[in-house]
Image (cartoon, rainbow, N blue to C red; front, top):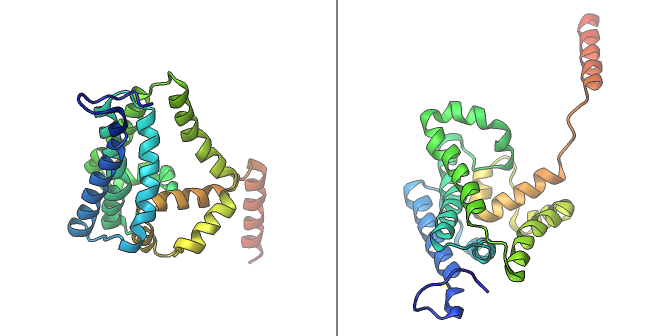
Length: 224
């Protein structure tokens, strides 16, 4: 059962909080993306994206011990996945992607002082709030936390068929990630691209392989 309690609310009604909070955050993010940043999500795809985000919201709620921390964490996640992606599209022409983790320094140079409020501080707050708000007592909360860990881990194991199935359903336009974002929604988009990145990952080349490639390049240049 949920650790969070609200005075005057029956226990069953507390479980409506994630649905209401997710709905309010999603609507607000949609309106900001559509009217302030000109990145309108395709309406017929919204139910799938909203359902995935709501499932994540319920898992976070189940392991939370403070309502304010849960609501803040959810708000930051929605802001990052939707408004953050829309802002990045406005600046760079594409939404937040899994490979952005390898180009954080370049992103800071492009955004300048905006890099801290748009990137660093939200990420730090998300991780801090999640760790601070965890409650690990009770079988139900441990099961919810296990789901938060096991489901992504299991998805990465089957990442190839999963992302291919998602491509078949939601589509994929690799040369236009803005279109992908609009047709998927923020949560589906980051999940789909994360599965793709994991499935297609390659180990970095070893030093002897790099040296051999350089030698071949130099030999080819000398032959010319």
